[in-house]
Amino acid sequence: MTKGQIRKAISGFYYVEQEGELIQCRGRGVFRNRGISPLVGDFVSYVREGDNDATITEIDERKNELVRPPISNIDQAFLVFSLVEPDFSPHLLDRFLTVIESYRIEPVICVTKKDIASDNAIEDSEAALNYYRGIGYDVIETYIEDPQLYSVLEPFLKGKTTVLAGQSGVGKSTLLNTLIPDLALKTGEISDALGRGKHTTRHVELMEVAGGLVADTPGFSSLEFTHIEKEELRDYFIDMNRIAPDCKFRGCLHTKEPGCAVKAKVDSGEILASRYKNYVQFLQEITDRKPRY
Image (cartoon, rainbow, N blue to C red; front, top):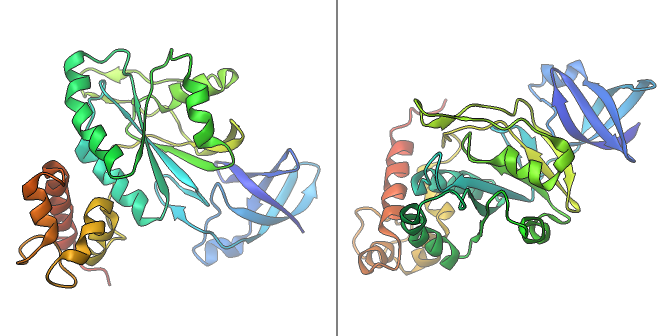
């Protein structure tokens, strides 16, 4: 058996990289029987059955995995958000951050389309972006013709496996086109009627970029919290989690409990009020979820 990493998955075929060569593989039937599916990013063992045909026989243990997009063994996530077309949404950003934090993946906030944003749009987003910087997140602001784009992104990408995630139309494919000019990914146009982008990326693929691996993934506009329990949610809001030990009651959910240090910081303006509002909404969403059996 030979070991390699799945770099691409299309229509039931898995393309495994081994010493610079991509081997077309199928998964063993036993994986389906066990309810297991190989994912892009998996390190696997395979047996060759021809010059460019093989069967995956084993999947190594994963350090993490995402369901949507389906990918494993990720070091960091570039959460790509545009300032306009579609408009910047702190609410959606907090949803992404919550899910990414829950998988113990390092988030990097990447804001696009600054070159076509109005002064008002830039000003409206700046307070929120400064807050995220202040609590410890890296925030990169880009535009497509930025001559420094590659040099800005390279230190973040080198030696890491990075997933690009965000709404359709925010510029993920355009960003990759800039990093890899020969890639020529089809970029989507924004639907004026719907105010959101068309899906242009149809599969997940890891590509070598700036000394690391970057995944372009199908765009999507919402994330569910089906794997998160309400007692866990507070851990994934890093600004609140740091203050939680000062709450009067252990296990404080930061809603109605007396002596809540988090609510005090919200009242004083040290925790962004809109972010706390998102936390409360997400908590209610999880509370209202039907029990899993």
